[in-house]
Amino acid sequence: MNRLENKVIIVTGSVTGIGKAIAKRAVEEGARVLLHGLEQDLGEATRAELGADKAALVIKDLADEDAAEVLVKAAVETFGKLDAVVNNAAQVGQGNIQDTDAQWFRRMLEINCVVPYLITRAALPELTKTQGSVLNIGSVNAWSGEPNLMPYSVSKGALMTLTRNLGDTLMRENLVRVNQINPGWVLTENEAKRKREHGLADDWYKDVPRVYAPAGRILWPEEIAACACWLLADECGPISGQVFDLEQHPFIGRNPPKDATTVPPKKT
Picture 1 (cartoon, rainbow, N blue to C red):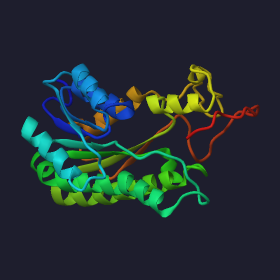
Picture 2: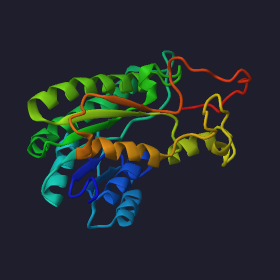
Picture 3: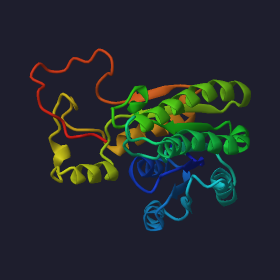
């Protein structure tokens, strides 16, 4: 039996990138998924790829007041229950102390931390029935972040604290697990697009300096999805309130090669 057999999972931001990879892997593992995104064409294409009997689609701006309730209601009405939520959708963008105004900072915090909280809160009655789980997708930038990713990094740090807090509280009170994955540098469609906009060749990812990627390449979305599906599965047991950094080097105690002089492509 597949380890996610008969589970119903909401995956926000799942028409591209990491979210799509998680939704696809979840279906392969036996789950039915509620896809979510902003692009109708990409959403329909993803649903067709996964199978109309395995996936439903909601196109919705998560900044809308009713977004959380709409997602939960759609999942339960379509599939009859809810076993898990993957809070993957995020506002991504640059900003530092010189150019980040209040509106941009608040937007980051709203989409990347407040919205996952609201979706978790709306889903809690259903997740309590199934003793389900929540998986938040953060970022390694949560630990500090790059200078030009200040508001994004702060929002992911806030999400990390939310994960640990609810992971403890909801496991004790509702037997609902909450965990988080902090991906490192991942080759998503948006990352490839940003690098092209920075003037890099289309195949830049095939030769990444090893000081920044010891394996000589960055992570694939499918590798994040593999960990995500384990955290969503019953075999994960009672693990809750944990944050998993998925990167190929440590953030403390790194041993970069002595000849590491190559300037990296700009990360955003």
